[in-house]
Length: 98
Ligand code: FES
Image (cartoon, rainbow, N blue to C red; front, top):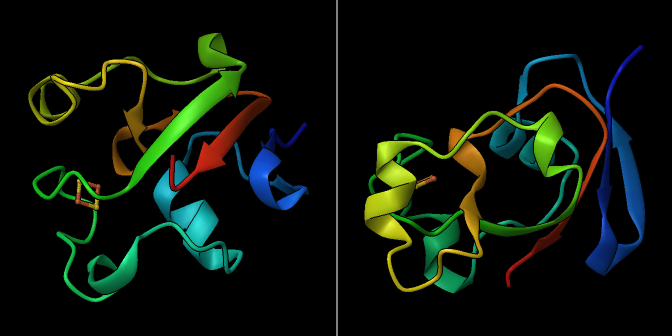
């Protein structure tokens, strides 16, 4: 069954293929993921810019684990994740633009 990603701050739930990249799934669904100019000037999912931040509010166990890029970029916000580094394996809830 397709995992469901609930985007709490906009009240939408998306069905995504198992193993989907969270950044790509959100962007494909038209969810605003990047603040301001980062929408144009981001690293396109390579884990370098740190602008695709999300807060996982439920289902953390259904996501792949924190990567080295996240550890480096989110040193001051360990409560957040980088959407581009996450593969979705099951249902979860996130907040964008935290
Ligand atoms: S898109 Fe740059 S870190 Fe995720």
